[in-house]
Length: 240
Length: 64
Picture 1 (cartoon, each protein chain N blue to C red):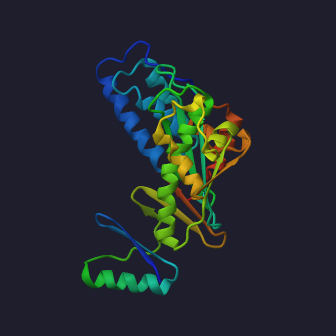
Picture 2: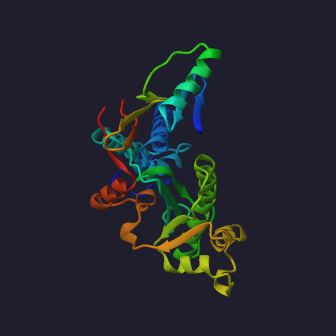
Picture 3: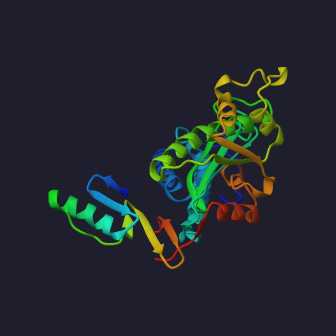
């Protein structure tokens, strides 16, 4: 679903055995998306939301993913040798058309390829792009803390995790411990990220949108942007 | 010297910074458990593993 559509719950429902077919297909795709193919995570994330009431459109979208995979079957994650971890997080504001919730996308790359990634609809409606990005950063922060501990276990040292983000106002909230009336509604749980930044465990930094590897995890993209993100996550053709 | 031993049911990967360390860990395992030495891993739990030591790259894929 390189140039995939946003799926909604409306449409002519699938009947009989086709429902099972759809569910099995999505299960198989999920296995790939969590294994070595972060490039289909967003598409598969959308498909999984409709396993209980799939429509013809959903099945057609699932088949599009299959065709995409057929053409790109040789892609695998390619790791280099410079031991460095970077955690990108981003959000697509109100991307889910049924609930108007935003979508979190994060990817942690290590030695040049993805080791941990997520494309997930947020658990509550965000009031603004800033808030949705902040929620995404908080979700990524939890993973970052865990990964930092794992690296420390394996190597004996732990450097602060670089966390690129393309939203200036979300970065400002992370760094600034002052509350303001406009963000009082942001759940306390998300202020976890602020605490970790204050502790210098996480290093949020601003990067232009074009340099974020995460867009592919949140929204349908045109082919050039899709390919750029895919390569940024370390997905290149491999030969046996 | 750290040696990493990854176990999934009956599949075991032994990883260490030097061959000597990996070999001694493998010897310790084979002494106690009935096991077969499979050499460099190329396929583990459905994942292809391709290593290029000259370029220092490791590739992981699920192409069947």
